[in-house]
Length: 227
Image (cartoon, rainbow, N blue to C red):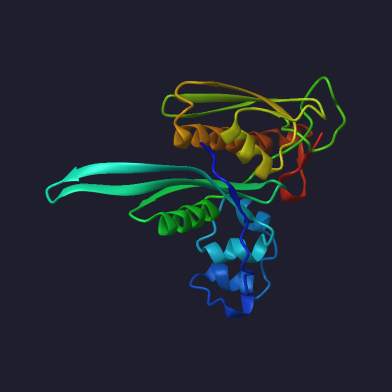
């Protein structure tokens, strides 16, 4: 079950950041000014501070908290598994999970992993019922899967909203997708698989947009696609 939204209150101070990678140094020096410059080259941010610097309005949310127990020689060990999502409501979104013995560190670890796992979602108006050309939906139908959970996301006309369950609805909202229909199959009560299947489908928008770019789908800023 999705938990309450957490918006980071502490402001990231670039001047106090000491980059550990070449990419981080280029970001701090102003040679890289957009997260799109990194993602569209097929690269990944190696430090969470890179995402904090380039996407300052990023929001974080915990999708699920579960207790995971395992038997070891020393006895039963319990951890908290956190599923988290980050996004800026404008084409940037990331989903990840982490397991740690305490809830606080587990949440922080999951959020950091989600930042390092962000993608740029291609948005557009792929609904034949609409045709407005605005990036309010997705440009084409996509599917995703994680374990037994399968999802299918279809473009919807402007004003419909996100016709989906709570977990994928949060992810789609943080990705900046406003109007879609969604179908799902499998054990959707398992939050981690439901979230990862939705994220897997959103990855397809970027892959297919690159293939279709020569046919008239042109990527715009912050993951937008003009139709």
